[in-house]
Length: 483
Ligand SMILES: Nc1ncnc2c1ncn2[C@@H]1O[C@H](COP(=O)(O)OP(=O)(O)O)[C@@H](O)[C@H]1O
Ligand SMILES: [Mg+2]
Image 1: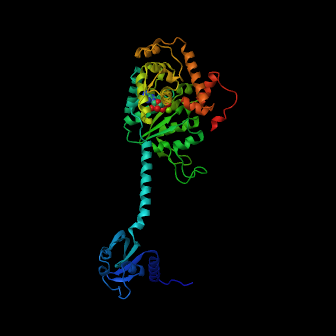
Image 2: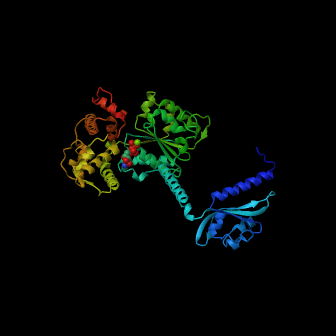
Image 3: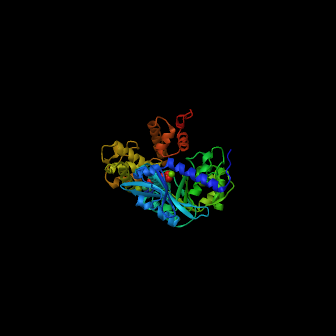
């Protein structure tokens, strides 16, 4: 094997190999010396500038051959131009200019190469790059939007005493820094208020990150909350995956359905809240986080503490600023305003004209029980709007609700329903309404409980509980719901 005897020889070889490579790779290459005279030019370049073979090009001043050349300034300044556009007659070419240095680092000349003989050639690359930039920007925007509050206090509709008090408590909580606990049945607006509190807090410019402890399988919840170090478990990947706590750093973490959090995770959550540090799975690094927690639950958290299924210490840690959300049936005065707002929202979403309520329609709505609260009310209004040909929804458009026998007479009707309409024990009336609604949901979903629960705005577990307490539970296990 031939051996390379000196540094100089290596360089020489490298340089000539490179020139050969340029010769084949690029559309043209040219070299000038320190005085700006051409010392070498390849055939492609010659062809490009239309140089006929008879006269020698070497030894001429660069500008004599290429009037717009900037190679001389590369020699003078020693600065490379890695990407530039050179005009040659009517053509535009993408070029690169590099100073050539001798042994001692002094400039001995410059090399110019034509990367593409047409600017057009860069178009696919430029447009691909542009596309990537656009995609990145839109993903970033989506992420940022997802981490921003979607609701403000003004969107929590209600002028009843209970609604006003709730809002007042929530506003006060927004001004402070402690943990907030939102307590209320499903569909009462806990998520709405969590967003509003974040938006009105000092952390409004920070992220709002949400996690629902009931919606995420227990096995994944820990990783979702606290993050994962690379290689923490098989398939964990090589990059660290930030947990929700880290994503919420500097902002707010909305811990929805916190009552559904398993006990071991409750312990870990408590530690994070006490120490202000998270420990991702599979690592022993503690990362400091600055997060305000807003927790919510539709469960009786105090009762869970008493029966040992929720840690008392965590309960007190979360319950610094409690906010109770009233069920819809306790603030029936809000029906007219609430229905109006919801009907406007529904119209806006579908692009159709806004529907209004006839007095008997409103009366029927206000008299119903609403275990699913505002969410359920919204669903019922949506169904009625979709099914009805009338723009003014009457009692008959709400056949999914129990009937009320009232003499129609404007607002007075509503009040009579609210006040002294029914003389049935409340427990019985509630059970009846629940029963009707659940049977209807099961009917509509062909008995698939998961879907029925969704329609009803409750969890599958809650549906099972209700079915058994209403004596509707079937013997066979529900396999259809596992879709
Ligand atoms: N007071 C309210 N005013 C207007 N809309 C409400 C109100 N409370 C709840 N909603 C609406 O009802 C639906 C359910 O509210 P959400 O905040 O998800 O309830 P929760 O988290 O308590 O189950 C959402 O569409 C929400 O916008
Ligand atoms: Mg919710």
